[in-house]
Each structure stands twice: as structure tokens, then as C-alpha cells.
Length: 265
Image (cartoon, rainbow, N blue to C red; front, top):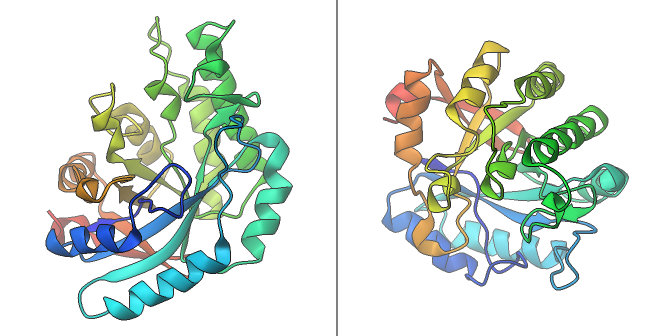
């Protein structure tokens, strides 16, 4: 089993020491993990600073890798939060550092916070979803410094739709933009912990990704606490196999490696 999305106290929204999470992963028999600490420049909440101490993070990862090399593979990743107006900054900061894996996520839109609901003020849920996906599309058209897209339908976590709109046209444009570039998506199991009763993205979006020819998929718990490492990952392997996907991806120095789902379930 591989868990390719998790955080430690190097991320501003997490207090868990990295070693606690590694120990939890070892105890659960996980073969490989990747820390994906937050960088979210100009995040629209003045109470939190999502800038990452890159030097200290690199040093801690190397220490952990050496200490646990006989027990588990630990990779160095990052979760970069994109918005249309910060793409140049994102590119510049990522070019200065070496990572195994980069998640491209969008946690804010229209320069407003999804988490506290500011983004949804004075617009219908449908209008909010459309703007969120349009901004995400713009970002992937202009920004290439990443491995996969994180929790593509994160917007669902914060506001339920009042209609059956699915926004597949925009999401299809996202997929037809990223797939030829060798980029993938993740299945983020943290959705089960909130109001979604599913992972992110939902099954219909996974089916659309496959229809568009997508093959690169990682699976991650988005754990911010050690006990959440690996949650629901085997269930997602089984789901992906049922949808016709054949491989799970891991990454080494930004290059994907493919593992047969049949050998993981």
C-alpha cells in the first residue's frame, strides 16, 4: 500500500511530528509514503501562513529516510496551492528545490477562502462551482510544475449543490489539458471524514478521467494526524480496479512508477 498525501508539523495546519506519522505507517504495513507539506502563497486568511521552511523540511526528510530505510520508503513531496495570480511565484519556488512529487491543489478561488465560506458569499452554489473549476482550468493551462492534481472536486466539501449540475464540460477541458502533458490526478480519501461519504474526486469524475485517457493516479489519505495514515486506501484500490484502472502511481524525482492494482488488492 502507498499513501501519497500527508502532512506533518511542517504544514501550518498540522501539529503532528513527522516521525509519529512514519511510525504509524510502519505499524500499518504501508510500503511507501510521501509527505506533501503545504505551500499556499497569498492564502486568503491572515490567521495562517502556508509558507514552508524548505531547508528544515529537506533536512528532516533526509534524517527520517536514513533512520527508517529498512522499514519504509519515505518520499519528499509538496502540495502547492495555486491561484491564477500566484502561478509565477509557484513556479519560481518549486524550481529552487528538489521534490519527488508535487500535488497541485486549489484551496481558494476568486482570492477568497473556501474553508471559511467567503468564496460562496453572494453567489449560488452552481456559480461558485463553475468559477472554481474555471480558475482551476486556467491554472493548469498556465502552470506545469506539478505531478498530479489534488482533490479536484474539493469545492464539494464546503458547499452542496442545489441542482444536478456536474460541470463535466469544464472538468473534461482540465483533463484534456493535463493528460497530454503526462500529468495525473489523485484520489484523496479524506472526503470520507467530512460530509461527502466518498473520496475526492467522486466516481463520475474518475470515470470521466478514464474516458479521457487518464492513467496516472495516486491515492492519499491527506492525513494531518498519525492515526489517519492509510485510511480507506485499500477500498479505493478496489474501486479503481472496478472502474477499469490497472495501475497506481508512485513517484521518484518527479518520474512516475506504476504498480499493478491487482497485486495491491
